[in-house]
Length: 154
Image (cartoon, rainbow, N blue to C red):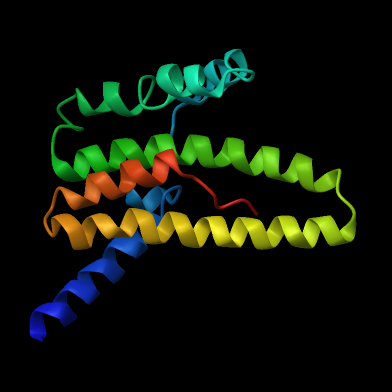
């Protein structure tokens, strides 16, 4: 039974790590060039989301970062994904706010409920890596998952 409590504690720790994506204390912040690269790519593929995902997700920030000495360790890799996550999360927040401004009060409430459900889904899905893998590789995998599934719109 102790193992289950330890796993629960580790999963809680991972949830804290995952929830701190844009926090400067978790690592470096995205550079202006990284932000511009993802914004440009997202704009280019605005009408073709599948192609955009293939070309924009991880290829411009996270993967090049993991190919550096700083990004080669598990924690370095996790930080690379957190940097990319912060960029995508900001883009999502901007789009969320723009959409919210076009809605009436009832629609805005439904949008907020949908967003909360999405965050719960994302956190449950991404935190599962700790349970499934149960090792240090789970940390970068959970952060990669969160980068792929942002959703902290304000």
